[in-house]
Length: 558
Image (cartoon, helix red, strand yellow):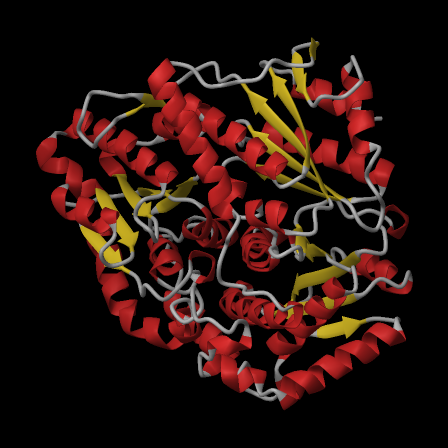
């Protein structure tokens, strides 16, 4: 790891923090699982440090994983669909999109959107007879994951019958969870019980990440070996411990207002950013503080960035795609951190490096990095919306300020047209302080992502603020904590649609009755999230689009 910073005052502060870390024996205390590193109470710390032992402990699980993978391959399965959210889905997605699928192994897809269009598309493209469904949730009660499970369980039951349906399902969960019990009742092919002392976003090197990776034909033994080597490095003193140094650097920078951690990666490893985004945002975004990870933002010239940026350049050895742009940032005086990977299997090292660094950054910032106190707020409001729907047959939706060209605006602004409304909303953005988060409760496909990227780039160029894009409800299990728990500098553009198709969510696996649809669920989640943001004093504009009107929003930013 290399670090470039021309600000001597910040460098001096970083060196002082290195010394403080050494004097307080922080590295040793983390490995001793001393909760007082972060808080004077052990709540959600002492039972969340199992990730430290993953590289060693899960070596003994390699044979069990391999046996399972060979069993399903022999049974004729060619595809797998992982049903999960947040920590259960992000690492598997990184593995699949980075490594691809080895010949003769299962082609893995990940479903973490409750948008009925996304569920239907996945349902239509799969050959049920050859698909293994992996139901993945730590708590065993995640509403999105269980909704997916019930929908696909009924689909398999309908097509293949009661004798076959259980063979097409496997579970990854904590011991004693609701899902563990369901898996027994429904005769799932296999249940992997994870170490319960591992939090979701720290679970990449446990069953949650390793089982899906192995199904794709990735050598989990190699992944764990790289991680184990990194873990050994993380036990060294600060001068030889790059993860601890990384944690101190990003923590000190964030404390000084340089809190927009902007990821630039080699194209082959660009998907790693989505996992790192959850880890960093959900761990540090609380108590009025936070490090905002900025993932997949277009790399522009230095003039389009403000002084709240630190750039993290993760590159594969011999890759030079972004070398010139990153050098320009360093020349312009921005802090730059460079990390070089020998090959894609070094992702095993990076998972552990960033977990350890994030834990250290939490110490620097004086926050507890293993809880997520604000995540529940949006969930609670969404549940209330759903209860209201079940009582009255409709959701409590507000009236729009106005509608123009198929876009309805909800913001309480003075403007009476789309362009002026967006301009008025974004006029409060402060370069060097604010960020704009685009929260898209729409179908997460390539066309929509491309337009959202165009929208964020226009905003970045015009206002010189950091921008993020997240599909809902996925980001609720990722950056959603930071959005409500940080210093309140975010401006939130919520984009929702009216799905043209809808799908019922069975009340129970195997039941033909349904009191909720995916369309209603995602709308309730959007309404709940908006309410939670407003309750936290955040600035939100909601734009409801009709079919093919997302481009109207893009055109409105000039």
